Image (cartoon, rainbow, N blue to C red; front, top):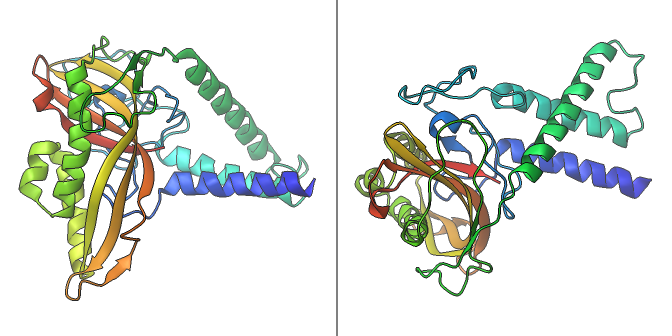
Length: 308
């Protein structure tokens, strides 16, 4: 029983960390941000390396109730149960409930407390979320494999795998080998430009929204007298989550597991403030790319980063 309760506590801690992001200093700093067109507030289709994605914490896309998508209207987004602020609130209640189980008070302290009705509603909501996640996970697994030949050849460990999501936001889009190579290349280019604080280059590689977030992060580093040095970025495995057309744009969300050296350095002395320059970190993130419809692989720009 003690071991079971300890496991529950560890799961609660993991949920709390998943809601807030990690403390990494790479591009995006371990948070979820950006826009995915009409799918901004919908869950990306799961992949073998990304069964769950953290909801976007910052986005320029308004969160509006879903009715019937109008593909010609920019800024349209889905609202969903368990996302955004309410999702964070539910995460907090879930963590509290798990702690209640740990200390023997039931998930919400039993049905005799003053918040029994609220506890019942929250339990029903959590059951709904679990069922919805399970249906989404098992309903969207459509494997199709591609072994990349780009800068990460020989290290894909199964190659790029993909399946299209079922969200009603535009027809699916076929992704070519050249597109996969472009995604891998953008991964290294964005991290390199971020490390060199090259905003002009970031504007070419990412959308205006993502560039603005990166600029805020770099300004924060400068105020603290630090600089983020990212190097040795290497893609280990990639999964296509979903790709679709939307109005005059094309989107692709890909899960990427990669390694990198990520350290914070004092600007004046060069002293390492955090991170290990000799030990690579391993990260898995979902990156969404966008390009004008009909354009080639070189036109892909980063439009969102989500934590797994």
